[in-house]
Length: 278
Length: 232
Ligand SMILES: Nc1ncnc2c1ncn2[C@@H]1O[C@H](COP(=O)(O)OP(=O)(O)OP(=O)(O)O)[C@@H](O)[C@H]1O
Ligand SMILES: [Mg+2]
Image (cartoon, rainbow over all chains, first blue to last red; front, side, top):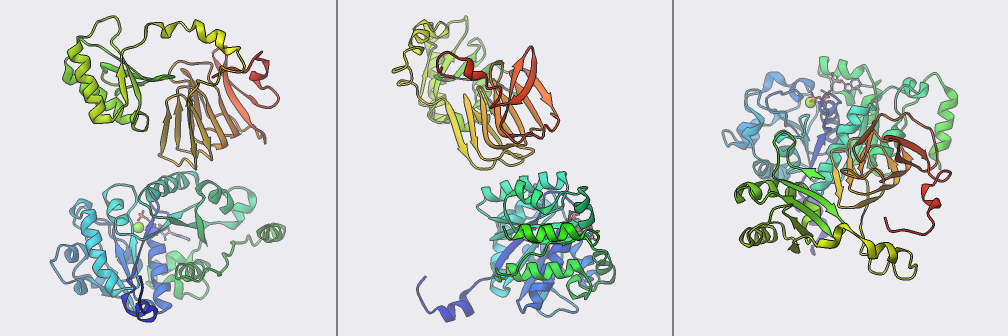
């Protein structure tokens, strides 16, 4: 497109839709969506997080906003309310808005093309629209990937999660979406002992771009229970990892990925550092 | 061989052969049932059917020309096959070919490729079927399935499921640079959960005395014993 690049970057740049998906349930999609959404908003971006888990809403609880829901995303899509009415502003973080799922509906009430139209409107208002995809590869998944420009696949270091992530990656490529990988719930001591697959093992199989490694961290549960966003917690390794992931997604490519280190095995640590330079 | 859904008996069978797709059907069945069964099988083998040569075998029965014409039109319109023809009488006996085989200078000349060669990673949930041999330049992930009527060669890691020699060619082999399949089948023989051999070199599986054996390819290469290079 020709034209004034400056005005273009200011006005006509539409927001980006990123789907957070995994195939397998319970691997950390909702945690990731809430954390990256919060971190991007802290970077000064206008962010919408959308709970696509219609019928099993979760994201509102993780963000501590469940008591503010009046309208939900289905109401907004179906025109029962204005889009603004369904957007719940975060309590602590500026520029962060939640579109909660409906708890009563079924995933089939929305069609992929309705999602595309809905996101088209959101793109005008927000810099980033994060879709918290439900587990599985059925309608909820289709609805979530239909409008997506990018995809983040969340995976844990276990065989079944990897298998499902791999399936999802194939389906994303089939839709011409290039997925990026977050490995969640890493326990460095177990990796050091050989009881858990290393991130390298997982990347070898999935062979997509890695954008972050997140430790198993008790603060994740604390954050959910207190409603204080993980990325605002000072001593959360997971929160720190998600902040860096958000920066990477936001175009800061040179931020290195930190490998969670075992506290016990110093030799392993040195070995891995040497290995990185290769 | 690909049959229709295993629960109900299909009136049509489909098999990949050197010349193309060999379709065996019972011409005494109603044409609508034949079409439905053909659709089921051809839809499954989608990437093989486009521009394929179909050999329509009606077994011991003679099919009326009206039926073969109708099915020919049907397959061409619906699945874009290149041609449909009856089986040639001599295909079962291949005398001339045996002689030709030893003519080093000419035997390959007329051989069109029998191998499907694909490059890339085959992921969980993906399934690739080759009419004859299958060569994968890349890895086959756990949960992926690769199927061939002939040999399977993976120039990469084989972690998924591989079915060679389908459905009854037990002389087929499966070879991979890194051989860690979840399950393999050669002909009708199944081997599941092969133990880690820890081998760092290429290994291959073949059938010996009704069992699947996995061996180091370089040290026990079975083809070195052939007196002449042969077409697989
Ligand atoms: N890095 C982590 N450390 C510790 N616990 C974690 C971590 N990531 C996620 N969890 C916990 O795992 C559970 C599942 O996480 P989450 O709800 O984010 O997964 P999900 O993929 O959204 O699940 P679903 O498929 O049900 O939507 C939660 O209890 C969460 O607190
Ligand atoms: Mg969730």
